[in-house]
Image (cartoon, rainbow, N blue to C red; front, side):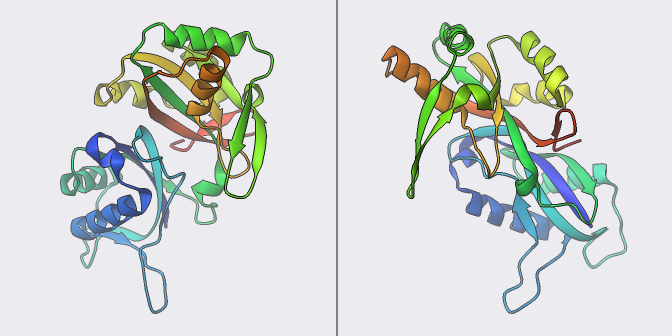
Length: 254
């Protein structure tokens, strides 16, 4: 049985890497008795994988972990719990910095969420109240925004205009545009906004995944380069991740 677990990552735990976060979940699942399946061989491990590991120092209310379960029973018992009961039980054994908000049962033949990822949505929180509108205007009024991506093996140029789908300082405009291009979960975003420290928000939705992975800080860096500003303070919060549907993007929680 394959399940997809959505969770919040916030507070000081945002500064640990994804391998440490994986070990955290392994311990939580063992303690709460979640019947996670293990790999075979000399070094068995829980069958878990992240959709897209979050960068160190970032907060999120839309992280996803794929897990393979043997059952919804508490391990070594015949006590079967509902999904709602499992969410509560996992959170009892976790802390208030990692909070499970949904468990979705997936088809057994589904591909790993990492391979299905095609887009992600974010809030960029600025200390300067004028920046969200200024960056929105910059994005809307620039025909091509070239960002030079440097990796260990190569250097490539990316047109951010082609790969960023929404940039707006308005929550109403964000919801309006998202309702056109995506099947998403606005209730989850609004329910957990209180968990976030947001000053002056800029909403961004962009391409993500193995073929092309746009990070919202690329837009900020491109703006800084175009205006020769170098002292922008901001935080990034990931809202959700999406797969591609026939006509739109679909939240991984759907």
